[in-house]
Image (cartoon, rainbow, N blue to C red):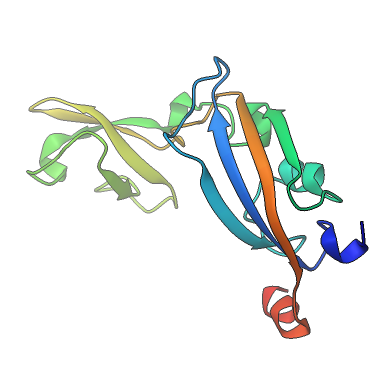
Length: 154
């Protein structure tokens, strides 16, 4: 197999992938697709990018990653009780907010996980934080990036 038909630095890579939890349950109902520039874009977790280095078209890979290599450990310090009156009256579980209403921005996205008439629980952890995950990956296509495409990603 030629170098151009392998996943290497500066190649566009088209993937299909599916994520499973530690009980082998699919996280989402269907596989997702991703096109990225290998070695230049940070669209993949580093351990996945390392694992697919050198693979060819139609290669398949299953890779199990610990939380530290994906979305991090679950951090209870990122869970906050917020007065309900600071939130929209149309509040629903699953709604997200940039930062905690009424406090300085911290750059995190908080999701409403529960609420009562007086309080709401906002969680700044990624929904998959603290979970070991298996990634089933298939390389669909590989092609050479142009010098301009590579430069645009630097």
